[in-house]
Each structure stands twice: as structure tokens, then as C-alpha cells.
Length: 325
Image 1: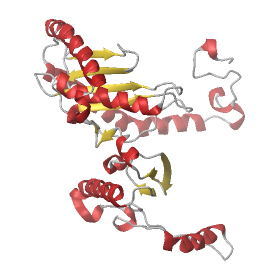
Image 2: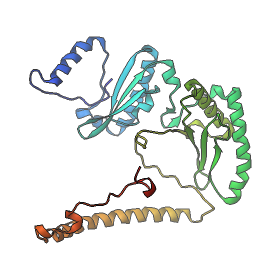
Image 3: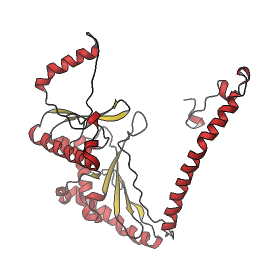
Image 4: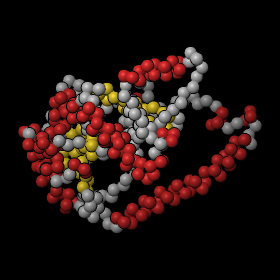
């Protein structure tokens, strides 16, 4: 399934790309392919509803794959980092590819019952199987969270705090950190669940079972629906960073210590950021021209040291105590 992005590849006879196209043509009778998108791989022809249509398409595609293609391998190319979340199937591998300057995702997945069960999210919320709420493990976990809430709620009310941690790996077998956030003025409440990666010696099936049990206990214990429960897995990566899946500005105002005049604080933050952006835009070009003129006024043999000489000292982006390692 190619979600948009048609492309044209040209080359002389014998060119490797041409040979790849020939192999693809031979493979076509054995592979089901499809494409969705507008001109040059955009959804512009759908107007403002394009993103909603794409999300609905991915959801429907996931349902069709699970119903009719169990046991198949599938590859989906999408121009959205989070479009795959709507599939309802957990990708085994995710590759970042580029269509010119446009960043895309190539999702490789094995269609099976397990790939659907192991999905962490449904849209932007955690995937929760509420049928597990009556299991012994889920009840035990829920009792601990309920006990923590009972102890913390009076303190939070007294201190006028609306965001605080309600669970932090209290039981080793349920290794999670759970934070509770409530909007100012009694708005909506969220749970942010962080799962610490289990050691490789732990059976993945046991990890999945405990995750499902823990999530199933949260709606009934906290009174917060699945829509407002979000899950993130914390694990070590070889590059030291998590891959960015998407970007969306969505600010929430919470109370900390009963700070007054929340509307004034929000207005101040917005004005400060706006003035900073405006000042930078108004001065950047002028200052850049002045700097270029100053630098160009020096003879070639007397250029400023910072611009013409190699540094003799490397500034490491880590503590000095670790720089020699």
C-alpha cells in the first residue's frame, strides 16, 4: 500500500534503477499494491478534510488487513509520521525515507493477531483492553494506585497542585511512572504513563501482559477515560534520542502552588514569544549585512582569528570529566 507519493525514475539501459523497475514489474502479479493521494503526493484535492480522510483510510486499511490478510507481510509508505497509529497494527520496523525534501515513513509490519494486541496506542491515546480489569494482576495494580491517590489527593488540594505523580514503580513487576495532570480552573484531567523498558531476560509476553493489566486498571481506579490516558515507553537507544513521530502545538495550563492571575500569565507568555520572534525577524537581516560588511573590510591576510583559524581546543558536548573517554 503506497499512501501517496507517485514517482518517476529514468535511466539508460543497464542502469541499476531500470533493473529494479524490471524486477518490480515481475513481482507485481504476486503483490497487492494500492495508492492514495493527490497530485505530487499531496491531499490538496480534498481540501480541509484531507487529514481526516487519510486517518479514516488508514483505520479502514488496518481493519481490512486484519480481516483478510492475516499472516501476510505489508509495507506502507506514508507522508505522515503518525498516520500509522490509525492502522491498529504494530509495525515491526519503521524507516525514515525522503521524497525530495518531504520526510516520509515506511512501515513494515506482519499482519497477525499479536501485532494488533501489541499495539500501544489507538490514535493519540493508549490502547486499553478493559476486559482485563478483573484479572488478579490488574486488581492488585489498581489497589496500589488507589491507595496512592487517597494519600495524595488531600495534600494536592491543600497545596493547590494539579499535576503530580501518582505511581512510580512501586511494585517492581509493574515498572511504570504515572503522572496526573489537570487543567487550571477545574478543566480536563490526563494521565501520562511512562513504561520503563524491561530487561531482555524478561519474557516479552509477560511484559505485554503486565502492561495490559496496568492500563486496564487505570480508567476505573482514577475515573479518567481511555481518551485522556497517554502511554510512552522509555528505553535506551543507540543514538541517544527518540525518533520524532510528529509535531503539534497543544498547550495546557495547570496550577502549581495556587498561582493567581493565570490569564495574565498566559498572555504574558504569548506576548513575550511574539515579541522575541518579531525582534529577531526585524534585526536578523540588518545585523547579518553589518557583520558581512565588517568581515569583508579586512584584508585577506588579516581576517579576524575566529573566522580564519582552526581551533586548537575541541569543545566536547558533555561533561569535562567524560571528555577523554
